[in-house]
Each structure stands twice: as C-alpha cells, then as structure tokens.
Length: 250
Image (tube, rainbow, N blue to C red):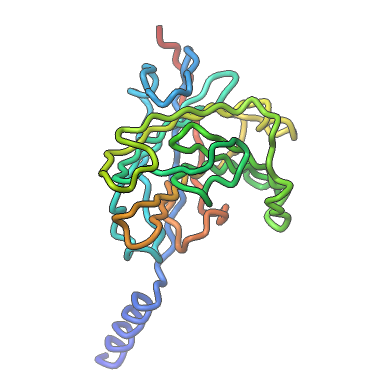
C-alpha cells in the first residue's frame, strides 16, 4: 500500500515538473445578438457590450506557471446579420505597435489581439489581427498543413477594426494603462466556403494576445482557451462559439 501511494506521489510530482497537465474542456464562448450595428472604433459605447459575457485571457500552461497574466485582459463577442464583433479590453503599461500598414504580420511589430475562427470539422480557418494603432489584418489558411503565411493575407476584405489607447503609444519611458480594440468581421468572408454562421453553424473561436512591455521579463502570451502550451494553432483547444436565442433590444 505504501509503495503504491509513493508511486502515485512520484507520478504527480513528475507531471507537475514536466509541465504535463490534465486536459481542459474548451470553453463555451457566447456571442450576444445586437439589432444595432457596432462601430469598431475602440470606444465600446454600444449597448450590446453591457450584455456580452467577458472572457478572461489566460496564459498557456507552459508560461508563468499558468497562474494568471501579469497584465490581464478580457474579450467579448457579439453578432448581427452581417458581422461578428469582438471587443478586447486589455491592461497594458507599455502600449506599442510600430507597423503603420494594414495586412501585415502585426505580432512581429508590437502589441496585437488575434482572433482565430474555425468551422469545426473543416480544414480551413482564419486568423485576424487588431493592433492598438488601429491596424488590422486577415489571414486565411486552407488547412493546418498549408499555413503559408506569405500568401495567406487577405488584402481585399471588409474587415474593420479600431482601437483606443489609455496612455501614449510607442513611448517606453512612461507607464500606460491599457488599450481597447473592436473588430467587425464580415460574415460574407466566413461563409464563402459554404459554412453557415450562427445557431445553424458549428464554429470554434479563440482570442489571443501578444503583449510586449519594457516591464515584462518576456513577451506575455495569453488566450481565451487554457492552452497546454504556447501554440495558438491548436484548434482542438478553441472554444465553442454559441449563439443564445436572438432577442430584439430597442
């Protein structure tokens, strides 16, 4: 009996030391219906955001011991007949984004929010960026084994994004408070390959973040899914995007 107990304790310690964690169920991410369109300007003034559930961004389990972000943030989802909307509210003491053009790999040049959208069971999926200076990008991958980033950029879409910075952008010498981003993803893009969107669809989603700061020991990564490791393309870990009953709010 003592030998079995000792072996069990050793196995637990080894698992903890090697960063092996029990699997976590992907979260359910509810998108709130809005009868009024959202203006993606980073202000978050629309009524729907007061009803949309905020989902915290979590560090991958191989980062920071999985104990929480040093600079936390939340993400909310909403939709109407034309767009999927995303609101991110992010604490950040050093807001930075050095790229001034859209349709670039913005995670290489500063702070960015990423959104991954996958019609479950299909090979293709999307990766979308929004940066604190309002820059945006949309990438389409035909499959997980065909992630050719140079040709994945979708330059001619109706994707819109806006942001507001509480502090000063690109000045590491002072301390900022954070930034807010809003994204409007056109449903015509998401349904162009025959995948229905809304209650009749079967979508997975994950918001993720690259956080650069002069006060951090390294780039801080986080996501709405409890990732077992720092890999934002682990599609099976993406949350289930759900659409509660549509209610008209006047």
